[in-house]
Length: 226
Image (cartoon, rainbow, N blue to C red; front, side, top):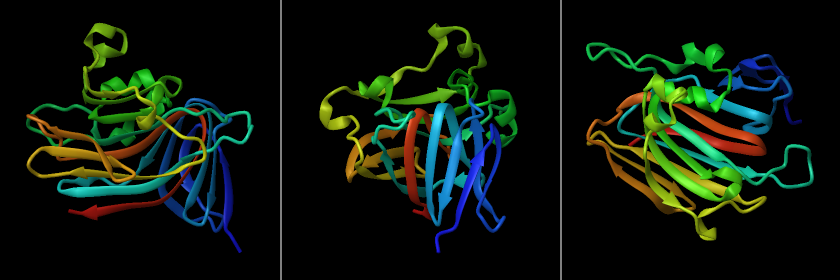
């Protein structure tokens, strides 16, 4: 029998029907956000902004893999947009300290995307802006960028053609590589969309799945040593 648990909350830890905590922490903008766990598959219904954080830190070299599908079946949150993620994310700190966990800021960010500019991380928005763009950025942890658009990080890679935008009800295979030499790569369905050599590489941090106003299924999430 499938284990099912419906979680309706703004901030909290996702648990299964047996009351066991999973590794996912929820940072959501809407109290109507719903995460439904069936075995190892998350059904994510998000009326507004959502960051779903994996609660364990990552260290390079590592590989992140998962499968995800944007569901389009006539539901109230079914919108073909925003299969996004942050990786190697942290709160900025002084140079003599290790990266700080972004999990501490869940309540203050509260799922609002603009608050994410305070993070240092890599960010890929696949099918963002109503499925019109796929963009890669490297966030620098500049809190002034929250209110000043001129300080926001540059787009380092962008696609606008239909081959690199979302398809409804398609199960995507995502693979993210973070190498100890400063390279990070993002693959989707075995195609490398990003191969970025970072001069100030982020070698430790956290992962979050990010979306807004959508219904998404996510499964087979794994962290591998490279």
